[in-house]
Amino acid sequence: MVRGLSKRFGSLRALDGLDLDVPPGRLTALIGPNGAGKTTAFACISGALRPSTGSVRFENHEISGTPYHRVARLGIARTYQIVQTFGEMSVLDAVIVGALLRHRRVADARAFALKTIEALGLGPKRDALCRSLTIADKKRLEVARALATEPRLLLLDEVMAGLTPAEGAAAVELLRAIIATGVAILMVEHVMEVVMPLAEHVVVLAAGKPIFAGDPRAAVNDPVVIEAYLGRP
Amino acid sequence: MSVRSHVAALAAVSAALIALALGYHNPFILDLVFTGLIFAVLGQSWNWISGYAGQISFGHALFFGCGAYAAALFAVHHGSPWLALVGGAVVAAVLAVLVGFPCFALRGHYFSIATIAVAAIAEITASNADVLGKANGFEMPILAPSLAALQFTDKGQYVLVALGLFVIAQLATVGLERSRLGYYLRAIRQNQEAAASVGIDARLAKLVTYAGCGALAALAGALYAQQTLYVGPEDTLGLPISISIALVGVVGGLSTVWGPALGAFVYVVLARYGGAMLGGSGRGLDLVLYGALILLIVSLQPDGLAGFARFVRRRGTAASS
Image (cartoon, rainbow over all chains, first blue to last red; front, side):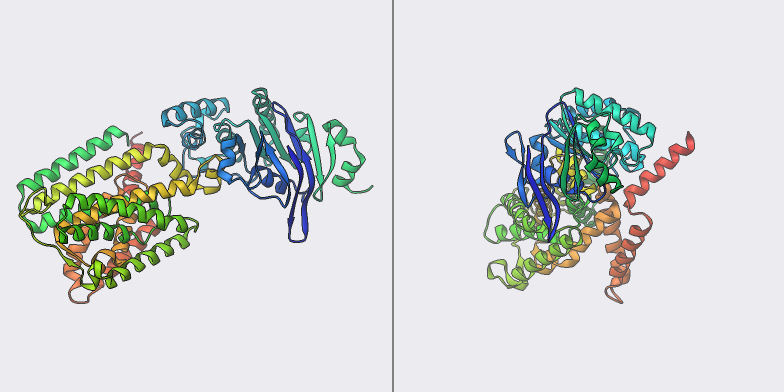
């Protein structure tokens, strides 16, 4: 799906020749140390940035160069590393906004949003303002808003960052449930441990270049990956 | 507020104003009410794009003037004023799209500045174009009073017509709040990036809204012209008109159904009484008062009068529970 993706900022090669496939009903993880190019890759795949070379294809549609709002209509939804909520709107209203993508009538969108909110355990907080939520709940809300658009591909940008271990464990359960519905997930993560129980396939980036692709258990034992994270012994 | 309570409030306000228009023949008060209703509609039009969508416009006189000039041109060329209402609204909507298309690429203050510039261009154009009466504008012919001519001898009848437009604007706003577009506008105002990520075409949503704003403000402009029977560039397209419209919206409270009406009430009372008392001796002192008012509200109660009412109500229920 992603072929030869590269992005240069001036003379800096932030991303150099990334290949990536995200099959439905699976979680694929893109990991790597700080500055590896994960966020750049994510921005190119979600349509927010136009890659310098290479292509991002989703179900026969070329994503790079597609206007940002149209990417969602194709069936791709995303969350943000730094949460982007509709601050002064209620949780329910924010999720309704997402649900309106596939439901023309507000009443239908509302019904679907309520279901989504319940499924994500935000039911008791549906009338709270988005800005009043905890970080964990804001991340949950972003996932709810994204799922309300009924995506076939869900892009998660460091959803685990800033969560306590208990919140993280709950999030892992949640992601399992989402994968079970057949949605493809591409997850960008800094910390390798959180993707271990979930991912079937990982791609490790370091300094813009993919250095490993394969099974996550093999990744943690790969000398090149260990060197990228910890340096040469 | 639920749809029901909005409609109930609207019915109560309408009943009171109808009684006033039919039973009370003080021209000073009726003129105040008429102007108040016109500004309530203008404020509501401003509220759609600047309140709900968060794109602060300081050029709303463009649309008001468009309607007023349509009324004048139709009157001078013996056209029906009802056609002028339709024509002015359509032209204003088209203008809004033409202006909005480039301007909505600008964010924040840059959009506001662009709206000032466009209205200024319109004012200068009207002041210099022969077909638009140049700087003198138009004196509209006085016709035999009738509903068809939209001219009346009694001020109360103007109040009734303006009330009709006000009711339409209020109901449209209640509908907007609950519509798909209403949700989109609020999302865009909160976070345009996140709005785009769930498939919202922000520019399209703003353009559609802006076209509606233009049409509504033009209808108010045409009615206003029918009552004053004079249309000139300064009085309909000038920056002070745009500022007044924004003042009405800010004082009343952004993104609320009743904010513009409250703001218009405060504005007309201040403009009439404040203008009469302060405007004469040191002209412009009333404008200082508006400036102070905007500063006070923005710093103390950014949600305006409607926000203050909500605040009081919430404290009341908190205290009783």
